[in-house]
Image 1: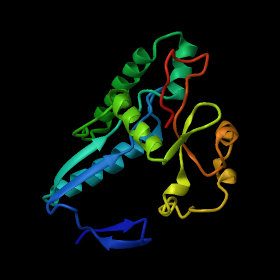
Image 2: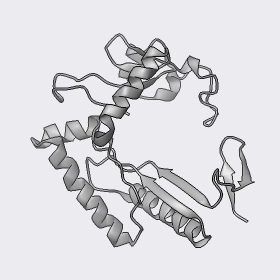
Image 3: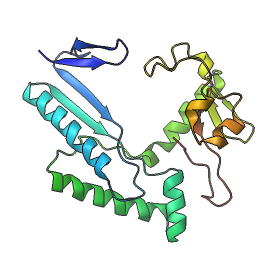
Length: 201
């Protein structure tokens, strides 16, 4: 009998898939602006172990791990190197796959890239804005209106209260939000970056 810790209930519970015999596993993957480090290796090995065990237990598993191939760090590193961000990310994606092979871990079944979903991301954010669940900040960035989601923060046990102290050094976020308890969904282009808007998350 497989038991998994449920963050919402703060307890171990018997694992019961939503669809009997099938498991969908979505893992937050790498942001490919540099070579993988030991933390990335941990992600690869841990979820490789989980997937192998689930398949050993006769579950039909779909393993998805995304690649963040556009964000501030990538843009900054590409500018530092004097190269396009696509060239940078392709190089480090190949290096990541080499690391996977060296660790003898399974490749994910699906490996979506952020850049392949930009139109979907924009469409989703536009819908959030039109429904009042997001707003444009004073600097043009788009923020999620957390107060519209009453259970926001429930998983992290950080719901309600003042989030300013939890944001650490992310001062530019605090400057442009209506208050500290907001999440950035989309950032406008800065003068030294790309010639179009880009996602921040």
